[in-house]
Image 1 (cartoon, rainbow, N blue to C red):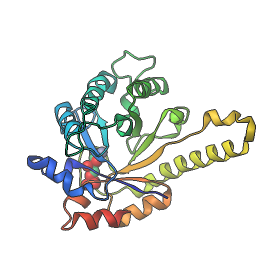
Image 2 (cartoon, rainbow, N blue to C red):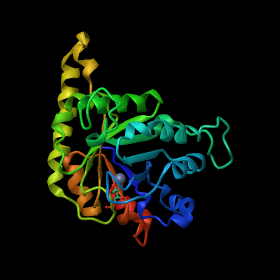
Image 3 (spheres, rainbow, N blue to C red):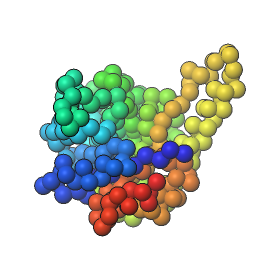
Length: 261
Ligand code: DX5
Ligand code: ZN
């Protein structure tokens, strides 16, 4: 399986963000950005201006993890921030021509619809679907996540709209916490759904009736990832690993990234 690594800049030195990102670029597939609002999670971190600056100055895809209430209110400005990096003119360092089709915006299912402005209440399948469609309409990849205490099965009907499903392996809000291995049940369930869908598509032959329901999403995990827990996650079916402390606090960041793959 192709394993993708997404260093979480929450553990980077914000005084020198660009060089911190450069230091992990080799071997990384995207840069994970934790956006926290102090309401959905008990911490406040990065906001729109930082995402915009990064979109304009780095070429790696960005993986924007929105840990915020009622994300429907902010999809437009985060999408605008990502799109601002697409100037159409490639600069010497490769920036300018970024393709938002490789970027992700991931929202938390629990709080989609919290504004009351969507077709379903907070946490509903309808609200989550609507938010994912908002993201998709901007040409950006869609992700949704659930907190450790939130069951994932209730969102099965939303899976066809997802390019990525993020399983939190810590309570969102802070880096450096302990990996919850019992979250692997969610990873395995997601992997099972992917396999069922692939088998269905293969079995449908020329009829292709089930092809329309084909699922195609990455399974990302976030929280407490190190070489040991990465192994558990990969064996369970995860293919995108977010890591903050393990990479940024390592003496040799390149080796740390390699150890996760
Ligand atoms: C936690 C964040 C994570 C965090 C992971 O709420 O979503 O992305 O940065 O940090 P580590 O890898 O240190 O657990
Ligand atoms: Zn995160």
